Length: 379
Ligand code: FAD
Ligand code: UDP
Image (tube, rainbow, N blue to C red; front, side, top):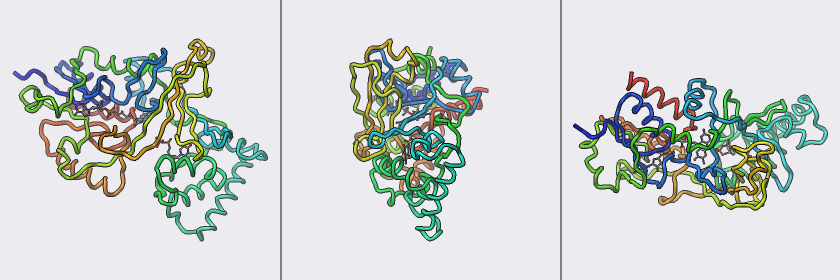
């Protein structure tokens, strides 16, 4: 008899949700994580009574009612709605690009017709400057979609900071689906449901892992007990980096990463919003997050006398850093495909989540994937 039905490597959203359904189906599971805490990138640290999103701001959003009902059955979600603000040399603009942005950008724009006229003039100018051909890089694409004023103040330098290269050297597809709304609506997402768990994301993870055996500070590759994991579990659920699983035999996958500088401010309200994007090169960071605004609304902001701020910096990834976003360029996609072929051939291993699949997943699609997988496994 093996000790566990499932050994689950990684306690992020994929591993924790899988463990939840396996446990519910009467399967025994052990979840391990090499970090000192559970929850993967959803983990929040309590600083001054505020839940600080340690691995970057996380806002849950979905139009899938089953996913929304499921997460709310674990922990209720609040009414947080993501409405980022952009700061360009001290000028403030609402995002995403909508009627509020256009009225702030141009004094004589008051109606959707005014905005459409102004934007289409600038789009026509951009298209003429490239002789009517297809845009060949991000700069040309953005100018043809929204015109020079929005591109200059809200896209160019932010994108250059985020990607570490000139907009002319970035592919057009990154910005192909820029939302432009002719209504006064600052809601960043188009989804039916969005929010943040009441009490923070750790509550969601605790709820998912309720009754499941877990072990932190435990690296699958470094602990001798896992060398022959098949002796202890029937199936391995692996949510770590796929190239590491195979000892980097074809080479290392690249990632884009971000770092954070977090500090406490001795005032109750620093920027009046959870997310402010800094869209010029004047500031070296891309965004400033004020964490309390994810969970404290209206007068409640002032119940807590302090606030916690994180500046977000985009940096080139080096092997010892946390991997954040896959770099889905031709070279890395081809490498990931080679690893995927190896992983498909494994019999007793399930590969899942953003690191093991080398794929950017928002949280809701991770839940969707696990719901689908476990509904087949535990019929
Ligand atoms: P992870 O959370 O990374 O979990 C993997 C876990 O495996 C980690 O805890 C790691 O320590 C562990 N592990 C790896 N290797 C080993 C090993 N050898 N031994 C033991 N443990 C190991 N999604 C949204 O829906 N909304 C957002 O606003 C949003 N914002 C984001 C912001 C940032 C900066 C980033 C990077 C992502 C954001 N996401 C957001 C996406 C979200 O973080 C992912 O959907 C989610 O984290 C995926 O969970 P996962 O379990 O696949 O990965
Ligand atoms: N972007 C921009 N200005 C902004 C916000 C976003 O130009 O204020 C561009 C930028 O190129 C970025 C893309 O839009 O890569 C997608 O941004 P989003 O914040 O949606 O996603 P992220 O990649 O930061 O998760």
